[in-house]
Image 1 (cartoon, helix red, strand yellow):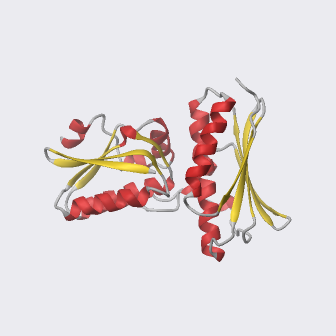
Image 2 (cartoon, rainbow over the protein chains, first blue to last red):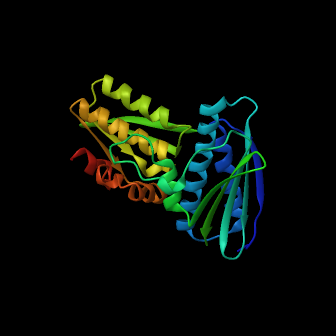
Length: 138
Length: 110
């Protein structure tokens, strides 16, 4: 098992990029050689939800023309970490207020699912960029 | 990408979305279920045994399709979800309204 695998991908902020993100995640996870499928499924679920949130936020706020986001996947002995960076407008999300949608709602589960799947989820704005940091314990 | 295999069964129709059911592919499931309801099917079985991964958009599509089936006087039942899919159903409490059946035969018989 490799303790550290590192991968960076930069993609346009469009929905088709979610498939690219998952393909990169799959290759990174294979390289990492982590055995826990529970960790994989939790972390992959959160990565997909945040990627989707970035694309949808970008699309709502300003259209997707020329917009892109990056995903950096890293690992050490204790954690797996994903950092998303995008140059879109600031998000006004307050993660402390996110709750799971009711069972008959057709939307509104993405961020709540990411929060539930991760050990920590952090959003901050720095140098004109949105930075999302996702961490799962290994 | 996903592909949705559709096959008619005795008492219902079985849709099997293979691969990932995410924001990219969930509209395909909504469209396929809407088409079958329009054709007169009432018992919609979604076979998740070939679905590797579902995100919140895929879950939203399943809830939407369940409502559509019930509004038409029918039902939607899910079968044999894989490990990641079972996890997200539990985490969102959707396993209360989408209770997995072990097999297509079980789902067809209620």
